[in-house]
Image (cartoon, rainbow, N blue to C red; front, side, top):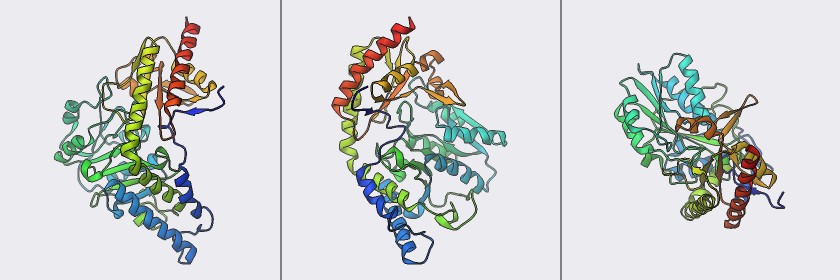
Length: 384
């Protein structure tokens, strides 16, 4: 194993930026008060929440009153869907989503189907782009809510959110987007996108785990899922997490400030890796490579090689990547995203995801490319 480990799994989670930790520390130490308390300790925490809400809202083009703090992207997705459905007073009940959504959306939709809500799952093409013709056909007179992710967590493929939101609105439906993988990586303005709800999570852009947010456009019907307090305008009761919320806002402001230069830098590094891999390894393909993608993500598929074995051997060499498969109940299952793109299960099993970030260097990319080539040769030789 190399003396220096190289982390290439930023889509799973990111390290905490030093600037973010510094902003959080006061609320983990001296200013630990409950924001609902009337004494000075509590009021200092409460003031931190106000400032963080203002910063986050400004970063995504929203109003502070439209920001709801959550424990992360999964809760934000669940609240977005369930909250609108519970707040709905119309006769509309139909829901639309895509086949490549994160499980935080898909599993909610699956559960709602069992509860009697009709759901349409729109297919994608072989590059992972939502089929616009099928999407338009999926919209009905009784469609209440559409939920389509801004960019896929496995392939990085970006969806035409603004166009989809406009179509949903013409049909009289609300539009939610899971922007967990796009916030901090590409320009995200809720007014420009025209979305009604948007989910994000701090730990995807150098912020702390356990902190996220849900944008809810003003006047969108929304009913709280929990009871127990008046926090977050009674839409999400429970004692707030000041340190996490401050970390969330600081991380997003930092990411937005660095976005123009960092986005370009990451795309250059990603393409540098893609070129090296294609030159050095035969029988390799880029999943979603012909589509627009977020700048930090490269999903690779290798003929006659097992992605899990590749990832394990890379880990032994000091490189952290993820596979094109998910572990569920102790069993490795092929990625539903890659299957939805039309790939066979054996092709999916031969895929890995490389996702880079703020601390990835050109040297990391070059050393990784060399090691990847060596590992693939080993895996293929054992498989023969």
